[in-house]
Length: 322
Image 1 (cartoon, one colour):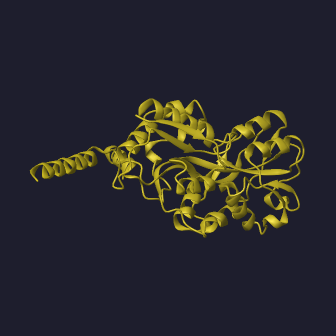
Image 2 (cartoon, rainbow, N blue to C red):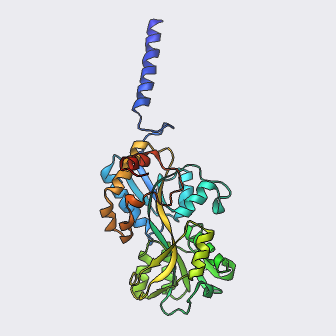
């Protein structure tokens, strides 16, 4: 009997010791050895920056990370919901829809999202060939227009902007294409315009401007005001002249913010290390894309409507952010 009691006590001590030493959170999840970061198409901004962040995580934490090319914001939310990825890039508007079960998430909200950081402004760019006669969103009626990959954040932006101009996808010859495919079809003369929501300069647009030549279509000031009033996650944004080859004047448009989100369940200490590593190595991200210059602690929580992951929150509190 004494021997059995001793073995039972030993087993209980072992269980509690393992629990105490676990790197998991309140759900008991342990830190994985490999993290997957959902990004976007290879011609956008998410993918290269995601690759840079993956390298920073690998170099500065106890886990390795890889960037995965995806259909971007909307798809990334579903990948997180299904625990197929661990971190993801998304737009602040899409994260809000997912968290609250709105629009494309009406069939079911994503209930395991937490925020790490707002990163930079994602500018809505309406791209047309340099010789195009399209001067306004209103001129898109009847035209061949890429409205983004199916289920992407770009698609949601395109719908909302067209709505403000009294148009729907039915008024266009809408095509659901990635940035790269949109660029290729414009270059070949098989597409009249494309919506692109990404940090400017965007590689696909930069490459197109150097070959085919492009123009960016401005949004009318009254339409911008109407859009921001109806959808407060937008802000007015100006794309400076010379952002792309041949762009000789400023372009008025709108933007949302790109953000990095994480699935609930990842250990606090791991997400703390990830957050710290990103903000202490932003110089490495700037060499990948100029938009990374906007990644800073000063605006890390701007537009954040999600609950912040405890690991990220710990880092921000250490830095005095509120």
